[in-house]
Image (cartoon, rainbow, N blue to C red; front, side):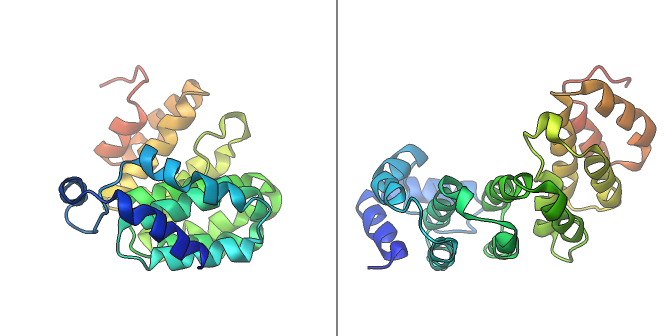
Length: 225
């Protein structure tokens, strides 16, 4: 069996129809679910995921692409776990494939998890790979732009401030909820490391940002009302 078929075989016996209905409702009925909680899913797949240590990046991405075509959302979550566990096998040549996944069956759950994977790949060689995010932030697809805005989450001292604030400015005019939320989230995350820098940015550029973005970004800052 292919890797994807092994994943689907391992998950099928864990299906819970009642829980699946609740999970689908939470996601606005956009996706079907097996009804498997994350800890149970990861426990069931742990031996398979661990057995793929050292696997070729192409093999991992092919498995992820096949899992993305499965109807149950847990298969996409499993694909992300697979890529995240073996992220060191990925390099700059694979960023395009990761962004392509983000655009398929796209919603915040898979996109945000893939943003972390993309960010990890980019961080490993920032001078060569971060310009790919400069392209992504201008992409026609909003989820690709969201990945670009969020790819530095958790970077702290490694954060490229020019890009963080620059992307926020580039996207500030957009009216989409998920973009506005992403700008605020990216700024708020960096504020845990350097609150004064984010406070200064909000004071200088806050008028160009949506109320949602300002609220999210300043959530833990003492900002004037």
